[in-house]
Length: 68
Image (cartoon, rainbow, N blue to C red; front, side, top):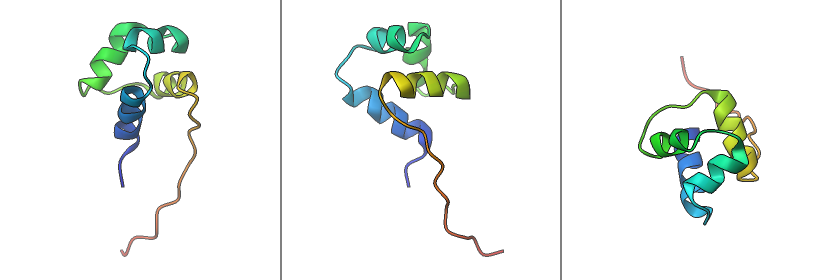
């Protein structure tokens, strides 16, 4: 399963807009998008803003139970 950060990076890459345009629509600094796609971490509040600008909905997915 692809983690949330990688899913968001893929969505940014597939969007068709520049990183600057996505950042402007998300209300975050463009540098934040550039650093994130280069592998840096984001605060969850920034993730939510970027996801909204990409018209994505964040939803919890329950993983299968792990053996203990």
